[in-house]
Length: 316
Image (cartoon, rainbow, N blue to C red; front, side):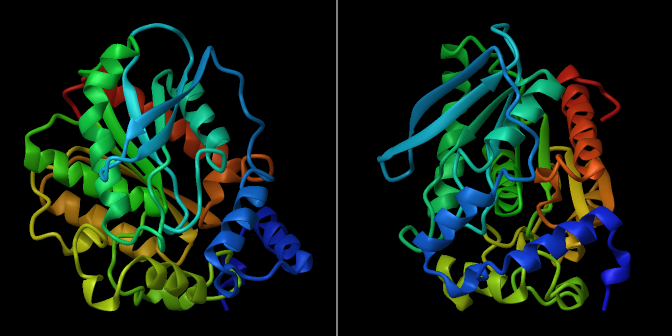
């Protein structure tokens, strides 16, 4: 077992989770899992920080339907914008589950954050989430201008499945010739088969279970589509010329190996990459700031990376 790798505080969190005896997500229906995740998502997160601007908006999803969004900003100035895509395995998660996290990024980085509520599986299977994320990015410059924000300084980011989507949007932006200051990838999934050594080492007892990952995959797309690079960015033919990346990974996370592999692939292609590896913590640690100092450290590093990227520093 790899339990010895955990920090004492992280081990304590996992012990509390076990003692609560909540059923694992993979034995629930998607609706049950969404309710459970929404109720629990911010229990360990930092309190929702007050901001000068928090505005609910409506955007247009790729299928023409209404897509909820929320703007976070520390002031009414002409701020650069981070498009943020929430995690949740493409099945769970929403604006509320990541409200605290988005507020922290906006507060610490001094930028605006636009979070979008993309369509979820299994009602909207792959590539619906990708299409919505790309539609949001395409609409971002005009929306930013209309909101009094700086449409020339844009970044994309997300955690977990949202990190996957952010990596995909960055690749699509490159192909479309759109400028992107940074791609922020927090514990992203980038592989097709959940078959790396870290998937085996951290398969059980480390917050996100192997069976739950498979449950997410099965609800999202058929097995034969899993090598589509829009689901598994490691499968993309070329990463050359994509935006600089800031990658945040957790040591005790099933997806840590594929996150490292993607960062290495970017570096090998000459893409500027900064990597923050949080030791002794699990997937979703970034949302546990009430109990884990590693969350605040990672948020500060994210803020510094965004500030540097938005400053146009040529060293990036």
